[in-house]
Every structure is written in C-alpha cells, then in structure tokens.
Amino acid sequence: MAKTKGMHGKKKAESAKAVSSAPAKQAKAKAAKAASAKPAQETAKKAPASAAKAGAASRAGKPAGAAKKTPAASAKSPKGAPQPPAGAGRPVSMKEADKRRGALKVVGITLGAIVGVVAAVYLVGVAVFANLFFPNTVIAGTDISLKTSDEVHAILEDKVGGYEFTVKGQGIDLTLTSQAAGMSLDGKTIAQEMHSRVDPWRWPVEVFRDHDETASLVASYQTTELADALAAAAAEVNATAEPPVSATVAYDERKGAFVIVPESYGTAIDVDKLVDEVSAQAAVLKPHIAVSTDVLALPDIVEGDERLDVARDQANALIAADFDLTMNGIVGAQVTPELVASWVTVAPDLSVSLSDEALVAWAKDVAATNSTIGTTRSWTRAADGKALSVSGGDYGWRVDADGLVSTVRDNVAAGQTSAVEMPLKSKAAAWNGAGAPDWGARYAEVDLTLQHTWLYGDDGSVIWESDVVTGNPNLGNATPTGAYYIKSNAGASELIGLKPDGTEDYRTPVDFWMPFKGNSIGFHDANWQSSFGGNRYTYAGSHGCVNLPPAKAKELHDLLRVGDPVIVHG
Image (cartoon, rainbow, N blue to C red; front, side, top):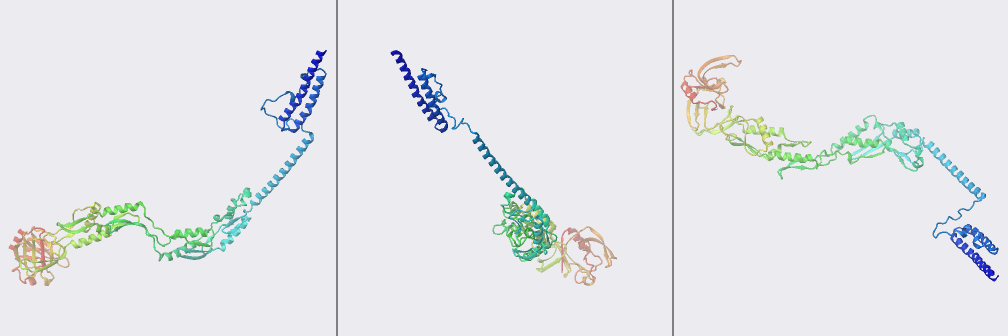
C-alpha cells in the first residue's frame, strides 16, 4: 500500500508539474503575440481552462499527457518563423461590415458629384470659348479678350480707318494716314483665322496665358501711295547722302602694286529696303515707325571676298610688262608698269582688263608723236649751209595706231620685258626724232626758189644735179612742196592732162616718167622747153611736174630708185 501510495504521490507530483508548466507555455505564447492584444487575451482565457482540465484529469488518475492540447500550448513556433498580422483571423461582426459599406458609399457619391460638377464647368467653358477669344488676348495694342469674331472684325476695321503713323529715322520724317498710304484690311477674314486657332478644349490652361495676335494683323496696300511717298522721301535724302563704296582693287604708287581697298559705308537709303521695313510695321498698325540702319544701302563687295584676291593678282600680273617700242632701232615709246597701271580697269564685278579707251588714246598720241608724214622737218643743207624746212607730202614714218593697240595689249598680257618693234604703216630711211629729217643720206632735192635739183648718194654726196622748170604758180599749177618718194621709174609714158571739169586737156608722150606724188606729179624729160632754170617757171612753167632736159632726164632715170625720197621746198 505504501508503495502504491508512493506511486500515486509520484503521479501527483508529475501532474502538478504539468499544471505548473502550462502557465509558463502560455506566457511564452503571449509574449510572441504581443503585437495583437485581443488574440493574446483570448488565448490567455483558454489556457487556464485547459490547465484546469489537465488538473482534473490528473486527479482522476489520468496521465497528464492525455489532456487535449491547444494550438497555443502544443505547437511551438520555430525560432524566427514569420507571425501572422495582428487581428488576422479575427471574425468581423455584421454591424461592423454594414458600417464600412455605408462609409464607402458616401465617398463614392461625393466623388461622383465633384466629377460631374467639374465636367459641367469644363463643357460650359468649351462652349463659351468656341465663340469668344481667350482672356488676355490683344492685337496691335487693343484688348480683344472675350470678344467674338464679329466684334474683333469691327474693331479692326475701325482701327485701320483711323490709323495714322509716323516714319522717322535716317533722315526720313513723314506722317501718313491709312488713306494716304492706300491701306486696306480684310478684318473679317483675319478675325476668323485668328479664332480658328483658339482651342476651346484647352481653355483651363489658356485662360491664364497671354495671347498677342498682332502677327496675324496684315494690312494690304491697294495702291502704291506708301511706296511712292517713301521713295520720294528717300530720294530727297539720297540727293546729299554719301553712297556706299564696295571694296575694290587699286594701284598704290608708293608700293608700285595693286592692293585691296576696303569698302566704305555711306548714308544713302535703299528704297526697296525702306519700303519693306515700313510696310511690314504699318501692316500691323504700329503708330510710330523708327527707320533702322538696316535700310541703308550697302556696298556690294566687302573685304574678305575671295574675288578681291583674284582681281589683285590679275592686275599685278599685267603690270609685270615693261618694254620699249622701237623704230629703226631707236626707242619711240616705252610701256612701263606705271603706264600699264593707268590702263588697268577693275569693273564693279571685279573683272580686270585694260581700258580700251585709255589704250586707244595713248596709241593715237604715240602715233601722232612718232609719225612724220606731213610734219615739218628742218635741216641745214650741207652744200651752202642754208637752213631749210619742209612740210606736207607722203614720205616718212606712219605708226599703225590700231596695230599698236593690239601689239601692246598682247605684249602686256604676255608680261613682255624686251624691246618690241613699233607697228608701222610706212617707214622712212631714218628716225631722228620728231621735227628732224628722216630721209637719210640718199634723197633727191628740188629747190623751187633756185629752180635746181640734186640727187644725193648713199654717202650724202651729190651724184647728180640739173636746172629745172617747175609748175607755173601764176596759173595755179605750182609744184607742191613736201617730202615724197619715187613711186615708179618705168621709162616712157604718155602724160594726160585734165581740165577742172574732168575732160581731157592734153596728151604728151615722154621718154622718162618718174612720178613722186601719186602718178600725177613727177620728173620727166621736156624737149619743148627751150631753157631751164631762172624764172622761166613763172611764165612757161609746167602743170606741176619738174621738167628736165632730155639728157639729164635719162641720167636721172638711170640713177633713181623706186622709194628714193624726193624733198620739194622753196
């Protein structure tokens, strides 16, 4: 019995231990669920009941382990396992559910009402601005906020009708009206086009913005009154204004070369620019138009233009030429870089050339200076030391002016630096400068005063001479003076004289015909003359020819050469 009692006591002690351990487990579960107060409280309420049942079972002789375990007491959560949220699994009462549904319904009704009001206001705005301009809208300084297209049309028509404006600057000072400027405006179309750009669906944003429609205002000009008025004002300014000058190329004497000369800006007005600038501002009805420097005429070419470099180089290439023009080995003219520079022209488009006008003028001057035909030549006769002079005739130097222009142009283009022969139409035997005899040592001389003639040989000595009978001056047949040359020496010929009316006057055969003025005046034999020399020519003179004794005529014929100079003076 005692042993049994001991066993009982032992069981009793184990039961007590089990009972005492239950509150400890409950405490641990309560601490793990501290985030949710209510579930913890529910668990705490159930734990004592379970403990009581466990105690009763122990007292009834049942093992403690036979007691029904609760989830809180039997399931020990792994360390670190996630816990359910507070209140999870808590049943919601019907009363609480109804309360929640009522709150959500109120919120929905309120939001719907707000959206409806906003939509209604938005649509009203769309309808309003489908016909009106937005607030803060101006055109040419006039407020057209909340105006209809028709109202804006009327405003524009009135504004143009009373439009007056001033134009000032750069020497211009005008006051004009729209009528004087010939201005008109399609206000209806402009208003409609402006409103077509109004987007009523954007009114909530656009009503807070500024809208300037001045750029839409474009007046037109039915006549040329504005342009004419501006052109007249510009012409008055330009009469005393300084025009612009484009950059160009010019000869610098100090540098001896062509250089680039920068452009210069003037005060002259470009009429087209003026009209464009004023018209653009008048079109938007500006009351005061300031004329800017943009209307000033500008040079066409400014420094930095590559064409300037090309033109400079071309001009300098031309003045590389430097050569003499010679006549019979003697310099008749010189072409120097300075001279060529005076002929070089640089056109407005920067094309470089030699001036035809300048070159032709120079060539004519050179030809006149170096041509001796018809000019007066003076010399001293070696035989008696008499000072003589002669002018007229067709013998001497004659420079080909046209040929000279071509020759110089070609040689300048080639950069010639050596002597070039002067182009000539005729040559003389010698070139001794202007005013000096150019017939050389060999020539024939006829002295009308002495009625005597000489032929000088190649060394200048007399190789033939004879008395003569020349033309009768009293009958208007004086032998012409001047420097001539023998045209032919063919021998016999028949001389035919003509009357003033062109009819034949006489026919005379001669054995030796040596003409020197054309084929009408020359030396020939005259067997009808009874004597030669003295004053016979004054009463028995010829029709202009130089009559010779027949024997002397033959001698001269044998000595004379075609081209020999014949100098007639007296």
